[in-house]
Image (cartoon, rainbow, N blue to C red; front, side, top):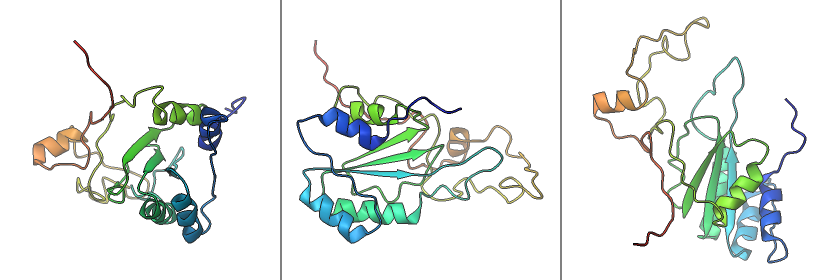
Amino acid sequence: VRPSRVVSPLDGLRQAFGRAGTVTYYDGTDKVRAAQIAHQSDACVAVLATTSGEGGDRDSLSLPADDIALAKAAVAAQPRCVAVAVAPGAILTDWAEDFGALLVMFMPGQEEGNALADVLFGAMGPSGRLPLTFPKVENEVQFTKAQWPGVEKVANYSEGLLVGYRWYHAHRVRPQYPFGHGLTYTQFAH
């Protein structure tokens, strides 16, 4: 499917800012330069991403090491930094503790940039909840090679129903972010 248009995070943020400010983009080829730009800015949005496709899984739950190094350099230079991770599933987030916020966008589609801007500028609350569990470490659930990635392209699903949050509950392991986790900002009045 080829969408008629795609709104990138950069396009969405620039459109949301309008004439009220300037959005500076840096492609991330040099983390020292990225840190300088972040330091000179009022705030920073670090967008990290990973992908997968039909017929194969990702090799790990980690985001690309270069993306993580770049994001860490940016937040070290500008504490008012939000991390945005675009991923098709669970990711490791051990790198994210210094960020003011972590927003995970699961396959956000062609309106990705507008959706991101709506959340960051408060037009919409980030009220979604995780539809899965984020582990603290790679293979926290202790899959065997036969279970994942499989042997000779055949995976053995011997874990039965003990997948996701059920495995964590049965083994009394606390994940990084449990199924259903999510924070938002709002005000309540009586």
